[in-house]
Every structure is written in C-alpha cells, then in structure tokens.
Image (cartoon, rainbow, N blue to C red; front, side, top):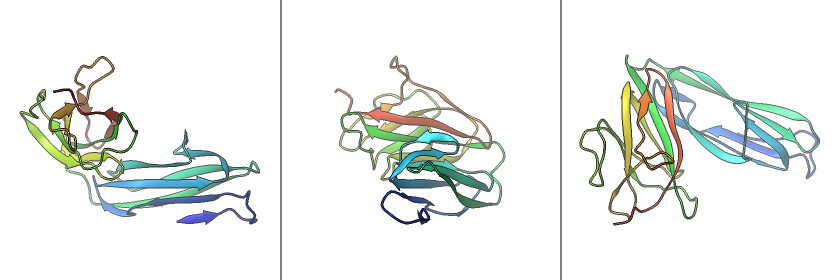
Length: 196
C-alpha cells in the first residue's frame, strides 16, 4: 500500500509499505518491503533502517508488521501489515534464511543455488544436503520448514563454477543452529567468486 501523509505539499513525505502476500501457510516466507521519500527516519519493527529496503520473513503464526516513520515536520505515523498464517508447522521444524550480495558491487546475488548441509561442505558442494533454495531478485534464500538441528550453508554462485561456504570473519565455516518454530537468519553475506 502507498500512503501519503495528510496535508499535501512537497515536504510531507510518502511511504510505501507492503508484503508480497498477506495469507500464508505456517512456515512459509514472505518479503516485506518499504520505500519512503521526504522523511527523517524509518523504523521497522522498532529498529532504525534505511528508507528503502526489504526483509525476508518466515512465520509460524499470524503476525502484524510495523513501520514507524518520522516525517520532516517531526510528526510520526505508524503503518501496519497484518499477515494471517494458516495451519501449524510440523513438530521439530524451524526456519533458516539469509541474503547473498556481491562483494564488489553490493548488488544482490540473484539466481544462486543455496544448500543447507548437514556435514562440512567442500569446494565440490555438500556431501549431506538437507534442503535447497535459489536466491530471489533480492538475493534472499530460505529453508522452511527445515528439521531443527545445525547446518552449514553453501552456495553455487552464478557464473562462478564453484561452491562458496558461508564463513565467519576468520574464514572458518559457520554452523547455524535451527530451533523449532524459530527463524534463524544468517544475515546479509558479501560473496565473490572463489579463487581457483
């Protein structure tokens, strides 16, 4: 939905806040998107965020998303998106999500094949794949529902020809724990083609 702050005029600001779906099944994921113009600050779920962005969110139960906007005239307005979740997630399952962006450009790494791996991956891929996903136009991927446990995440990046395992700041492959009914997010990861 696109909202215009009451009062008119060029300094009053505009806000667009929407989800790609507002009715889903338990464990499914949606993208919540917002864009603003002529505003001072934007807060998504209580946290300061850029004026134009999106989040991939998986839900186990119905939820209402909130976006609070501080306009140039110092007035505030809150916008909401209620999302209805039907059914329940299978017992013992959770959600694992993340976002891949190219390190050199910051552009989303769309079209990457991403695998949740139950054993340490190599440059040849995952020896024990549990689930697979493909990144969307925002570089987002998700595995949901996925059995609770712990996983490494590896990706075959477009045009790279090798698998890239998500690592920590020291270059050590990261292990991501998944709890029942909880969304674990790997965060936005800057990736590049590994050296051959």
